[in-house]
Length: 294
Image (cartoon, rainbow, N blue to C red; front, side, top):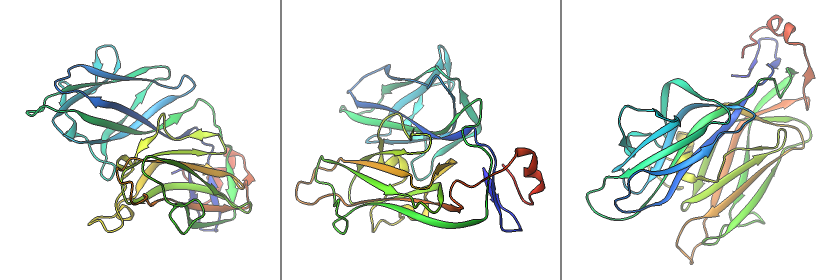
């Protein structure tokens, strides 16, 4: 964690050098019988990428994959079926975080090994962090902290409304001027699949390199046997949105129903912290505050 609530009621936050980021690999579609199909991603040149785990979504699990981060250096001794990766609800976490050095080309290799011919879409989310050399947020002290939930509400009860088949809508979630908001996890409820893209002010952070499929964030229907709220998508590092900031959520519908619009709610669970922007504090003083920890 990057902050903690100590016995004297203070919430301390150490300087931050890491922030959540998700790398999305995808091949749309993977053709029948295709071998050595690739999707290459250039990792940001300003920061390393630290991957904590992976989640996948696909129509058929009989696709063999591997990931290559430098020529000849793979994540596994042999190609393995994509169903060996986790889901957005239950990601497959590494035994040790994997560091992918800035500027690296990170490549997905995929082979179709299905017994019945056909095409399929595959997507993989690498759940991780951008890691910078210097802090981008200074140490801060807050005197008040409280859990809260901010919601992007794409339903008929909100002026923005539900999303028509194949359409895209944006929802700006506004943070109060009275507090900062530290996002810890996400819950997604919907009628049907969609693509989700998120941007937050502060560091002007875009959360993913490309729009992320809702399945990769553990989304569920409203009456599913196991709903998203039971297993929220947890960020390996909180995302701080400063007072008066915006969480801009863009959703693109992937359903094929022209009759019923797609109702989507994206919920951001976190901690609201006051006073806004916090109180400056030297890192040398952090150990003096009871309970302070990274």
